[in-house]
Length: 313
Length: 287
Image 1: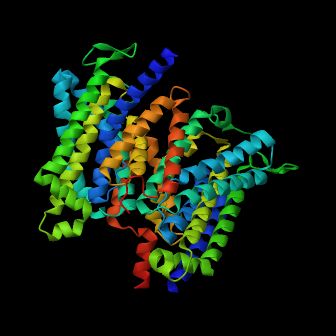
Image 2: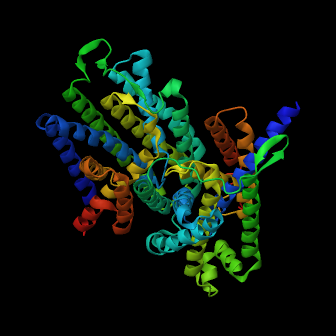
């Protein structure tokens, strides 16, 4: 009980800090903050899958990429506004998550991890190959759209609008996810995390609940991809690369699995680290690999998990 | 018509030879999973390291065949401490090992990129002879690869089924706790299995160096097919792995006659998904 209150205080505080930072930060740091918020959505979604139902997916780059292309293509081909673009990214993410979930969720742990990894690798190959649709490595660039196609005063080309646009989605996602986890659904997730065989014996349709978690998680990934693409104003086949399947795991592990908002810390640390280290060290991924091994060795519960354990006694 | 048949046969043989290389890689993968519960994401990078070291050592050794002997030993020498000091605590937890080996994979790739460079290179053909196969000139070295890998596969089979050490390995695959209770030093078996798997991948890398582009990401492409093979054959099932490696590679080889490599890879993926829907644990799984 104590933990839950601590977590919601932490989340409120983080969101408030983001709200204040929006108009105080200089433009370089502001775009870093936008990145942190976008990735936080991705990481929260990933936590639903790994932290709450024990599904270690290595296929989340698919949702990230599909969301990004859903948004960018709808602007490029149909000329929707930003809201419409995010909507189509979400729709595409939902469809793909549903199909993949039906294929993968039933599989046992090792099969699940490998099959999601294989499918994401093939998506990456296809994205590189189908240049007519995805633009391959060069990607597709768009002009930043207005929020609604008729209403041109508020456009994402204004960095402040972009910032609060992303913050709005972060807040809404957080509120929806927290509400879901406090509902009976969250209790079933906890039961599955604890022991899925027992949950099955208690009469819960474990497959269906795992599928729900997978889809929620995928849709969050797609939302994050769509927002990321809108912020960068482009999407390329690189959005499907394996890197985007690995980083959410690292964010969640650093921040604390199963805490939903712990990943804010993980995302912020990683993004700041990457922003400064990649500037002077080209083989940044080397440190990234070492970091993964160190985190696994030190604590699988992450920063917030550690704090909670200390605070909770 | 005769030309079509000879093209198909040619692609079939080509697929078969890649299938044997993939079999070496995926047998190691399957063995490591079966015995230790490690899903080794860095396996493709070990294959890559095998090829890279053989090219880098070529000026010193001056001989491809010597490299084929030396390189696997070097790789095995480095694999043992990785298993002991990095992977040991996570064994039996597939997801965690997968994350950890991904970290190792990033480290290996970046070290190779920093030392060897990012430009693809190719090994000189060590046996520049060509045969007339179904009316097509065929490189002798490729046929030699087939002979060598079949030899290694037979050796592996003899090792696993005819030596007392092989019995220990198979006992550890069947039931690790029971094997331990029977007085088998399971930890040593685990380390040796990991080293053996890595050596197989390194041999595959050396063999493939003259017929493919050697660069720091070359493992990614191969490990993808190796994972598909292991899944289709059934995780931890060695005969399933061998069967799936040969059949899938031949199918992919023949498909490449009519479609782009990416499309044939996607078709293989669809085949895998269909098989998983019918048999969620692969073709040769026990349960």
